Amino acid sequence: INVLVLDRQTERASEMIEKLSVLLRQAIDGDDRQLVTVAQETESVQGYLEIEAIRFSDRLRLEWAIAPEVTRALVPSLILQPLIENAIKHGVAAQAEPGSVNVSARREGDELVLMVRNDGPPLPSPRQVDQQGFGLKATRQRLELLYGSGFSFDMRNVPTGGVECRIAVPFREEVFAAGAAPLVAL
Image (cartoon, rainbow, N blue to C red; front, side, top):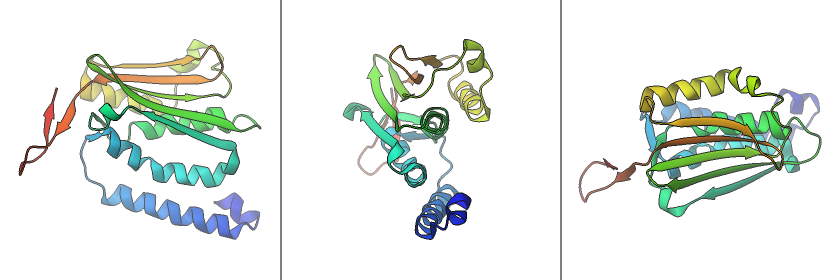
């Protein structure tokens, strides 16, 4: 926002401030549930992506591949935001040409698999994955608290270019019975 103001791009700065205020209001007014559906999670990250779309303009291409059968699957609230943020920061922002971020969710047997991939520069070494920033460390810690050893969290260079982050958690769905509170089904 500061750069837009300094560049006298007041209309874009104003739009970004408006999007940021909506995002902050949602965070403050949001409920405290640890788990949300994939549909709710993808919707909640849209505000963040709208801000990044203003920031990167035509340099950011976002692609979604959410399998219809996983929209009611449960995931930790705000699990995608730090992964997408890293994909943008280390992928799109790290190169002069336009970049892509791909977000997918699908079921693999008894697991829900979430993947965020960018087409930016590769990780220089496996050691860099071990020295992750705060967002990825906090994500891993949340997964450990919620699932114990029943999850996987991996980052790897993609042979065709870019970096991919993959999370797999037990597949559980939110089920609604007529007139009842939501239940969790395995």
